[in-house]
Image 1 (cartoon, one colour):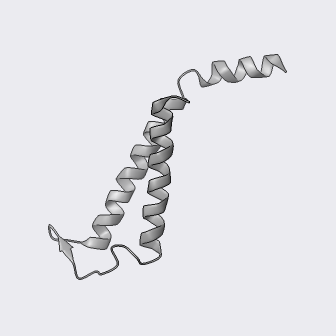
Image 2 (cartoon, helix red, strand yellow):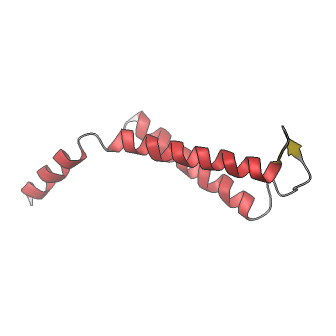
Image 3 (tube, rainbow, N blue to C red):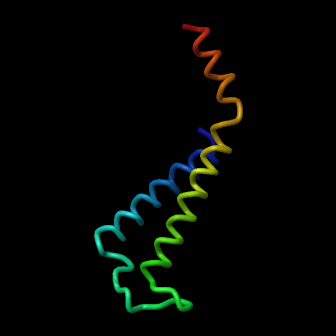
Length: 78
């Protein structure tokens, strides 16, 4: 496994942990805290959304190139 794939996997695991902590009410649960005029829970969810999209794009660019060629080779071997 190359280092780019490992970065994507670790980033996705951390994303799931951070999202679960917010869902459980352990992180960013007080709506009366504002950061730059935005309530902290909303800012946290926006950051999580951007992070999730970045993870998806990274996964696409790491695993998508050559995917079909590798899949066809595996199917031909069987």
